[in-house]
Length: 240
Image 1 (tube, rainbow, N blue to C red):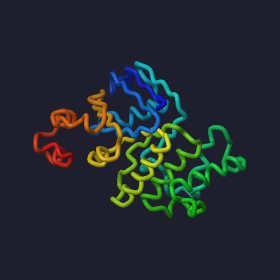
Image 2: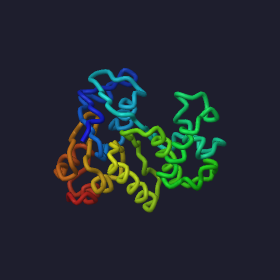
Image 3: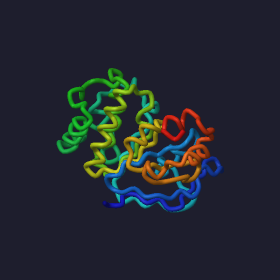
Image 4: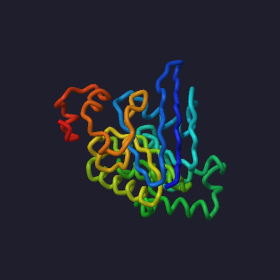
């Protein structure tokens, strides 16, 4: 496997306050890494730092891969008058003035990305016509259009019903099987244990990093999430 990302003793400050410290881990090709931790643990901040959207205060981030970033769906203006193909094409904006200037190669990539996520037949529909699951798939297509080898997914399952979650799980697993590395933040802990090859447990710093089998100590979860023995969280993970 190829190392796609190496994070070494990274710290992040926001508003002069330390929000992350001593963050170290690596991701290799084909790994599907679940980024887990309680609310306010710094998961989104870590993703934004990896993607270069905010500066680090300490440490180094070595990126050996083109990165595709899927933000939280709630951050998108879904009422904007734009078609699916146009939104996916906005991934090329850093190198093109606007989608109308895209060439044949770029448009082929747009339709290939839509086909990968199962939305090829909806390419000319407007954003407002989409269901929650389709919206999330569209954001994945937008990230895939530039053919990244590392995907950052920020809470892709939020607000989705179980069938849509299952469908996305199949998509992410399929991408990982092709060699794409994935870092996915999620609050669906049983789902993360089932689908992820590794779990990165964070609460301001790295609490644990390993396979789901490595993270079976209930005290680790109790300390990180601030729950008691026999809590519903531990029961859902089969640890109580």
